Length: 196
Ligand SMILES: Cc1cc2nc3c(=O)[nH]c(=O)nc-3n(C[C@H](O)[C@H](O)[C@H](O)COP(=O)(O)O)c2cc1C
Image (cartoon, rainbow, N blue to C red; front, top):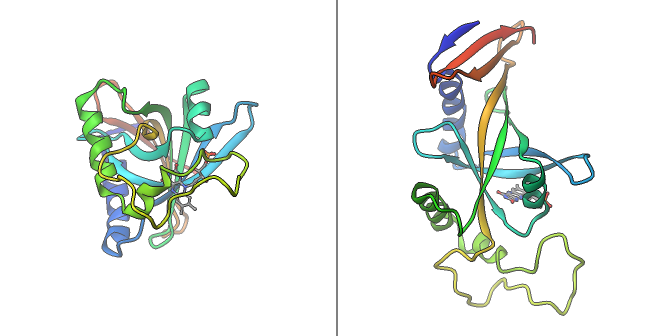
């Protein structure tokens, strides 16, 4: 087992740069435990890292099922296949929920900054009726008409994924390369090559 400083982050940032250059969203599949114990996955947009940490940020509607699931069971795994470079990042860890009651100025600033970065079209979705509930055609779903979008509503939240294991696969080489990374107590990462 070798000790490295942020090597998985360097690989991640390199793959991410390709998406950013093309102005395409970086889409993860985020897995949680459904309340009945089954796995639950969904697509979420990666919104960046929290400050100088390696903790990943995603936006969520606080009324969505994943929030209740994470409150019941905080472990999750997020998977990104960077198709352009043939790399897969599987990032497992504990998920923390950030909302308007979170008493941490830095995380509050993340919530504000991510809200500010959203298009009006996406912001309006937080004013739609609760996700997953039976559709009622009479219920108003604001799309085009004007609503107050400057400030985040209380149901706008963030998910903060705090990694404890990164499983990386690089398909560009023969044989493929696979590296497992785990954080060390000193703040760097233990990495080891494993069979793909
Ligand atoms: C391309 C794409 C991007 C999405 N991005 C997000 C996102 O960033 N956050 C989010 O909560 N849901 C996002 N969704 C919707 C989720 O995949 C999911 O349908 C929704 O969050 C409800 O999931 P849940 O009931 O498991 O909470 C996205 C869906 C697609 C297709």
